[in-house]
Length: 288
Image 1 (tube, one colour):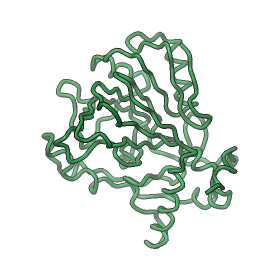
Image 2: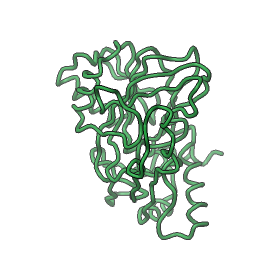
Image 3: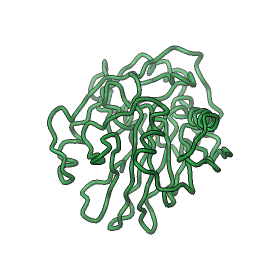
Image 4: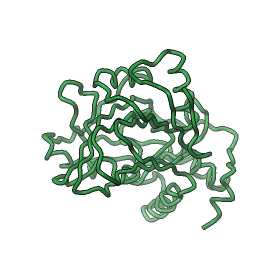
């Protein structure tokens, strides 16, 4: 099994792993790569049986159940990703961190795509470590004392009714999280806000909150912080929701894209004061 970094900032491809049959030693290597590279990719995989994908996800921890989305009829842990010519929405089509509106949002997500459009449908991932580390020390210290509101009604209300899901208010969780969250394994700080779920920063006037969020969202989306994954048949992406955002590009209409996703349950994000990090991307972040 070989681990090949894709960029110096984020992303690695793991070659020679068969997720149908992973030894404990191989899993330990995968787990370390997951923590180090934030998102890892597996190509040349068979189509995983639902039970196998669920079992692989459970090696990282208890699985998360999506509050609003349709799931596999036999495996409620599996979120069925599906977009086609009749779809009004495509899952993930906008920068976000998965279900950050939950009080205990996901640790990570594992997606395998079984059906691909003839072209398009790439997914972009961005490092929220890099987004934090390239801010000025003054801004880092200011944000460390703030919390933000994460809400979901504006996203989930009516979104999946065409796929047989009847929404109630219980489908629309909300939570308050620190703007800067400390990763429990790496110890690095990540900018934990996103333009899909984050609706405001506590303690600021509305105009101040809006202006600050607009600046931070633009900053998070810098190409220097990103890796772009072109899917192949049955490829798998495993990303860390505690320190990344992603954007599944819906540029393939009217073609179809379908797969299975399992998500690992996480813990409430926390901020722990650490030695302030500076990144070698500081110069790049100045270039605009």
